[in-house]
Length: 348
Image 1 (cartoon, rainbow, N blue to C red):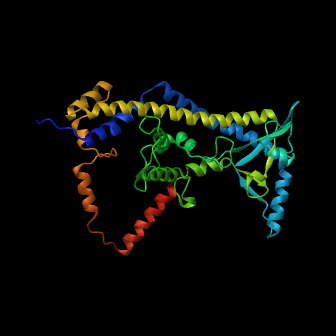
Image 2: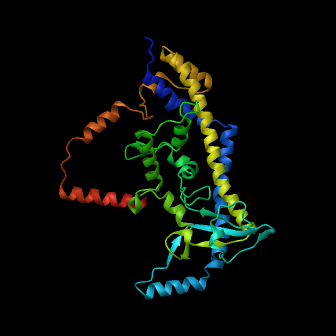
Image 3: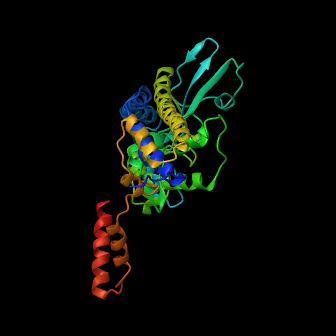
């Protein structure tokens, strides 16, 4: 048989469809660190949430919550209580040491002051237990990076509204070509971000059938009294409690860092492989390199696979053609199709 000449399409398939997934399955120190960081985060969050509930219940007692609901249900113009998942916790610190402050009340000038030379200051940070909550104590710094790391397996390979999800997209964007210069913002990045958010349920509202975010967030809700913005609710805790909250927040950061470091090693390896594949004139040369890596693929695997890793057969094409014919349906067929659809949606 004639030797098959290589081309850019073949090289891209070999690298992205076969070699990169193979590299991602290898047991390396970086992958082990990522797996460990991901494994501990949910139990740690649950434990920290119990502490947060204790702190909040001291400030908003069960009796207070009951009375607030009573007033809200009694008067149409009262809207004072709602469920929330994020809080400003803090404690008072002065030049002589730490003063335990559990009632949440302190001087407004100290509460948000940034004067490092102040003799007394209120140490406060924002703690958000939602899936896309901040990881740095800043209320306005919500991020999807934690969600992408924790639900990486659930996102990988999924296609949402025609766009392939990619939990590593933000890392790839910042890594660029490995030279230290980030990729510029582009439509592909935006589309993948939207696909990721829809797949995780971070966007799309209640009509979104995926529920990773909804199920996560529902586990971390408390009744809180006050106005809409959680910055208006400063809740006091002691220094030890604050340190525990910080440990949990830092664990979220460590998961993101472990995810980033692992994927950067994959990207570095892919960069080297890409250079090698570029020099291969014939397809068999690339297949031989894959074999030496421990990856067994054939010419048929490459030729029958799209750039997205989907295997296309003649039967698939014929089935698709058949689906485009005889599309007229009776009223009964339409009703039956709708019933089947509703049943499938109910199971999601």
